Amino acid sequence: MRGAEATQVNNGVVVDLAAIFDAVRREPTYANHCRALAQLRAQGEPLPRDARRVAVLSNFTVEPVATCVVVQAHVQGCPIELYVAPYNEQAKQILDPASGLHQFRPDVIVIMLSLSAIAPGVVAEPWQDSATRRLVVASGLAELAELLAALRERTRATLVVSNVAPFEASPLGVLDWQELTGVARAVEELNHGLADWAHAHERVYVMDVAGLTATFGRERAFDQRMRLLADQPFATGFLPRLGSEIVRYLRATVGPARKCLVLDLDNTLWGGILGEDGVARLRLGGDAAGEGFREFQQAILALHQRGVLLALCSRNDEAEALAVVREHPGMVLRPEHFATVRVNWLDKVQNLRAVAADLNIGLDSLVFADDDPFERQNVRERLPEVLVVDLPRDPALYRGTLLQLTAFDTLQVTAEDRARSRMYHERRAREQVRHEAGSLESYLMGLAMEIAAVPAEGAVRTRLFQLVHKTNQFNLTNRRYSEAEFDAMIDQRSHRVVGVRVRDRLGDSGVVGLAVLRFEGTFCDIDTFLLSCRVLGRSIETGVLAYIVDLARQAGATQLRGRYVATPKNEQVREFYARHGFVSAGRVDDAEVWQADLADFRVAAPPWARVGVAADGGAAG
Image: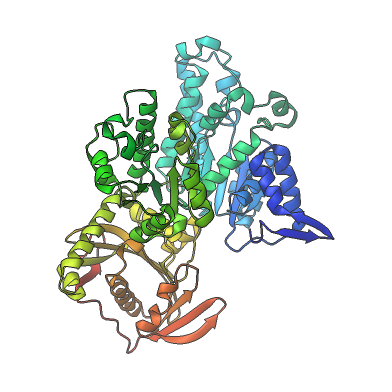
């Protein structure tokens, strides 16, 4: 929200939103959320253009949850416009094209249904035989799937569906897990069935409310009096936690906010100080403290395996430290897991800047974990863009602290994510080859590079949507489409959504770029043109533009237009269109417009790259 941390004046009353949000952060009570929402409404500031439109469908009274969602969205820096559908009208809202839901045109729809709504017999009739119980669960799943399928057909919105949790102990008591017909087993089958259905359908994700209530404590999460009085099952103490979790999922629908975890070594990845204690006295496994460090490394490895980059930033002798990483039997993480290493005696702020430069990412993509409070505060004050993790004093708690971190949340993992660290190692190999080459041109010619246009289908589509929200440097317009908007463009005949895949003799970089073209009359507009920072410096953008020019001409366009919208991070592409022969057509709103007459306009692909089309998502043939 613009100005969300500023002091506002309304009717002569000073409204200090920063203080209000700080109060919510310090004491996330339901009362503080209600006060914050009242002040937000009072100050009446319009939402920013990129605010996401979120709708909530529920068969119980959900307004108290919605209060916490709106406030948490502002506190976490992702303001939303929220529509709460009328109580228990989910079917009408979905099926009626004139409903408030469809008029609202949401980007994301959150569906929260209680166990009693999906499979009422599970709790109401605990003594059903196993065959009947399975029919009840299957019938409930089928009805829910039918409702979700209808919603997918009628809207392009991303769907976030909560799984279910029983609001009280099983009527069967300790017998519950002894019977095939137990309530707990039925709930698990229902939730697994929902997860399977969601996995099989794009744009549908499951929010684990069952896991959240288990972590919080079922007896603390639910309020039986409020359930009976107002059909609102959750305790007020749980509402802020639930609201925060919903916002966590909303943020994750556009991918992780951060890209790289930067780690200290001494008393962070292992116990002890290498330079003082020596290798033999380092604590890595073997006892409670040592196991804490190993388990922390295991959690870090799990992040690495889903695409988070890892880097080292430590005051140590590099050769000695890397020998421990490479050879110590207690180490889980090895040198190949780190995309870059900054182990020296320099200031850590300087080294963090170097890490960002090495990986060609912004400082706001970094998360820094260090056991030393001084180092953490030093980074906080001098590099406020970097997210600093407060590791607790006890290493046994390191793993739990990392698992609670939401900065790397994502709802989808692509092949490129899993291979990201390998790709950065290949990039370093290219830099070594470039250093050894006689000239830049001979280096590029020796790469045998292939640039392929790939259709926005399946896993490629997932990766392209991810790039829309992650790419900042080579991004001409910085358009952040919702999933609904993106899928609509893929299907519309007036648009062409083209993925870019790159590989060379040193490795496959995967899907690294996107062009969105919009055709209207004789004009072809380049609505979006972006490339991952991993592949910059090889003239790939020129090869892609050459393909765009040919594609526009073949589609019957006579004029090609591109736009440049300045952001704090894309200055390097300000002259992109001018360098490639486009002429200025003035400004429209915040965009510089560039145009080319296709009758006599040509862009030559670089001689060291083969540019083509790969219908199967592979490299150019």
